[in-house]
Image (cartoon, rainbow, N blue to C red):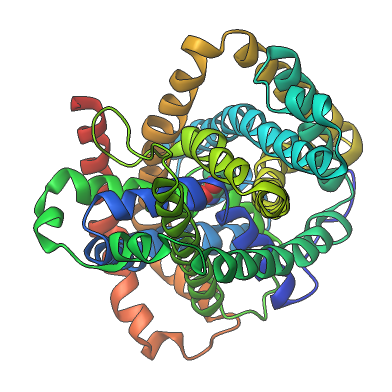
Length: 450
Ligand code: PFF
């Protein structure tokens, strides 16, 4: 091993890093519009149930394996294997996670680059520099390439500084700032005309919409992406967690923070969209649903900010800062997956590994930028709808079917000696053995059939 393994210095440090990974673009551009288009509070209710009954058990599986092995996913899964066949499967799943998360980062970095560019554009706007401001929101391939590279460089900077001095330090600075900016923006937007219509669309339950089984499945997919599951991110963060920590509790807190911030993002995004509607800006797409994803962030909201004059530039500045922070705390958790593998299994120096792997990922991003029209959606689809659920399935299988149940219990007992008599231990083993794999398979089959 090139250097001793890192460890988070405190529970707070871990919570900020892990919730930083979970809270990302997905929470802000996916969850709120999905909820509003699909039954408002009724969707929220279903989402909460799914997040805690399915995504939380899967998150626990990764945290438990990681802390037990104190190693990256490849080594960790191989360590709990039982023979040559499962060891082979372990390598395939672990490496699959590394490849998938690298591809996720390659498209995530492009979108995150947009967030940085829009942030700088609002700043230029405030300073009265109109032509740089216009270039920054121009959507040209040059701009995309430059800001993708800047974003990947920031990610490399944090990861190469190490677990405590990089990841933990930045997550504990950035996540509280994110929460503060989010709160300020919510309070401000709620004072604007049209905001209450947005709240109504978001929070008034329409139970007729949630009987559609496809909706349940897509809510589950959203929960898995949102908790960064299946690619070894939570496993590696779990491996940096102290043996004294109570795993079911810290895992529960991470899930709560993730869901809590997604719900709060809805209190900002939906009112903002309806304020935009009141100002004559289109907020529905051709199919009649609310505009979501990149279109929401780089078309609807900027149009709203533009219509608000000087105050709009300030709000835009805060909003794109919020988005950039959410992106960075997620991207560092992604880069950590391949970097930890290179450091631990190939004795590479962390700095060299970060630079080298970062450069490979940046090159992939540039290929996507140049072929954006057909490649971007394809990479998003393959990684988040295909690879992530499939790998998540295998993580559940490893912990529940391949690993020895007594060893699992022994690991959880560290830091929570009473766990055997808890509700967690009565429910979780059953969920991770039967419900999670079956539910993930359902999502998977649905994704392939649609
Ligand atoms: N959870 C992040 C989001 O909601 O935007 C996305 C993500 C982060 C996916 C880290 C995968 C990952 F490993």
